[in-house]
Length: 107
Image (cartoon, rainbow, N blue to C red; front, top):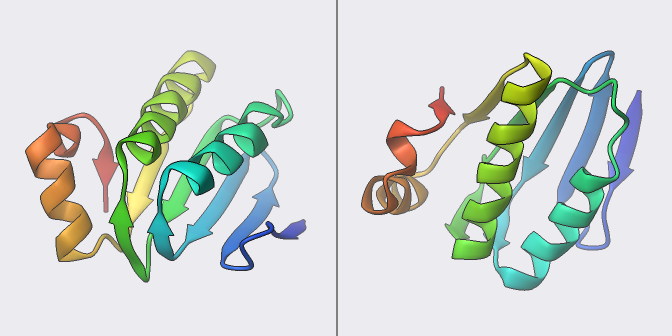
């Protein structure tokens, strides 16, 4: 089931059974992370797997990292998995500097 886009027009949401795929491009700054956090917090309890596709994501702020941390904890509690794919070199560098590279599943 396709959920569409959020107010930023470049975040895609798609639910497939127990999984949700979220495509994020551009910049994941504080304001955008707050919107993403609100949407994720209202997910159905049936969702156990979250995949973020960062194809085209140029930057992630600390608020965006907190959203990833929340998603990691949420999926672990549900017995699922959080995955991040298509990470740019710039975002990968942020993951390395913050220690997130060792905390999350990156494909």
